[in-house]
Image (cartoon, rainbow, N blue to C red; front, side):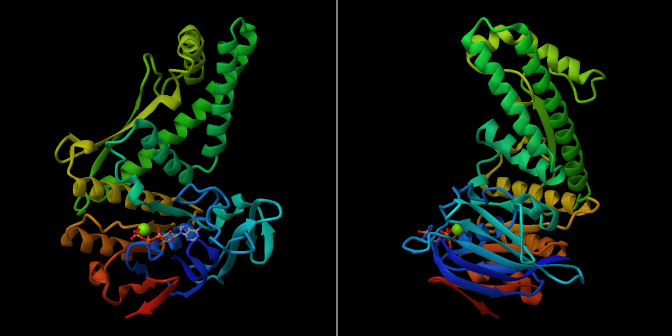
Length: 372
Ligand SMILES: Nc1ncnc2c1ncn2[C@@H]1O[C@H](COP(=O)(O)OP(=O)(O)OP(=O)(O)O)[C@@H](O)[C@H]1O
Ligand SMILES: [Mg+2]
């Protein structure tokens, strides 16, 4: 079991100072619109590397009107029976950079990933199935990253090489050897990206398939490469196939002003298995249920991975569109998880099915009060 047993916020968004003492049970935050529920989840999301669940600029969380210009989040993180770790992060206003401390020692943000895994679902993701391909791929890549931490590095290397190649194509008359060098780098990173995605997809699908009786619809996932002659991950000469594909596409990509083939053009298709229908055609509540199903499967896939702590699962307004049956099913799933779940909603009654299996806080005016 992985759980936060304490959480403190300083000058973080609507909070001057907030201190929560917790046990290992799932946490419910309820309160009116604008009360500060999502702010608490966002604060937790900064306990992982990256820009948090709002993808905010580093100084955006600083509480308006606060003189220090800094924000801080501190937590006690407990894994099973081990002694808790003290995690701290925040903005260092002098250096304009993120400060991370683990058990009182300075650490790199990336070190947080070894101690704490996070999975989150926000209302901004509600349009994921019907929305643009790129947003869906970003969602999937974040999921891949939680199973393959090197995925981010490979994606950065791929994008850098792709930008360099495009600059050469845009300028025209480049030495073919330079272009070839960029394409080789793209292909090398591209192979790693494709393999990590295929592996993550298989693990996710395995977790989905394991829950035949779930209240959350089972999805069939498929990653489509949006270009002709796209090699399969199983292609014996995947690297060569990518290199040749980039080389063949030079003229076309030069004219288009961007690279039109490669792993960055993949499209994640999500199908409602029982209806054999694209998830995008489902109702609002059905899409939400599928998203929650995917998120829970993601959490189980991370938890099932060796040497990886079970992830904390942050579900912002996950109950909003769910009927009472699905709400109760979600609460049962959250209680069964090996990582602490955090749920938000406007009304306490949405969470009645927790009984005493959860700990409830009423959020209002910069405070969070524990309620029975
Ligand atoms: N940097 C900041 N300084 C001070 N207040 C901020 C800052 N950023 C956001 N806020 C305020 O925080 C408040 C609470 O936001 P939050 O998103 O947590 O509400 P919520 O409880 O999740 O509401 P909802 O139910 O509508 O989702 C908002 O009123 C917003 O104006
Ligand atoms: Mg909110």
